[in-house]
Length: 294
Ligand SMILES: [Zn+2]
Image (tube, rainbow, N blue to C red):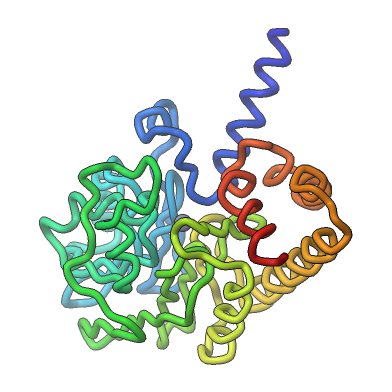
């Protein structure tokens, strides 16, 4: 029994590490025993802070730092420490990819020192309490936009653009034109995306949104919301797998398969995602697939 329990614990750890929006765990539980945040260099002036919560993009300029997302509130000190390891410049702006608290939780602290910018729907999702279990003190952006906005700092540009619904109804893709890099937020996260229907997400629209972004933006590398930095081909493969998932689920619905039968079929393709009946995808996405693709 003991080995079974430790095996289960290992599986849960792996699932927690691999899944976007590991929100079922409380931040305090996540904090116990986890390693300090890591940082990887993408270009001389662009970095990604990894570990606990969503990936944070860090653009360093001579006039200050622009962050993309800010993890959980508890990660504030860790993010600041990582930024200080590469520059003495202060964080001046945080662009939020979407409302989930593993990407916007740090707003609670960063709003005291920086300007926070998000899509207007991401702000509305925070003020409207659209995420179950989100911290009550979560702070929305003070500046919002609808289609596109840019921050110009130290002779560099960071551009945030809205291409439509996907993971939620407020996801933006952040583009670093000179670096030829995009940060997708949770439009790309883990092995297959979580679709948050309660937060306005859509599997059908996800494909259109990602296709529009890939057609519009000239980039080489991709910072996903969760997981390792990849490239355009990696995003293309991820997108193609989502199209296959949509077609497979739609075919099974036409065949009259039940939600549990569809879950079991998805589990053979994505065992760590759909194999766990309590995963975020099984709770938030699958019931929505059955409604949307019917
Ligand atoms: Zn998310």
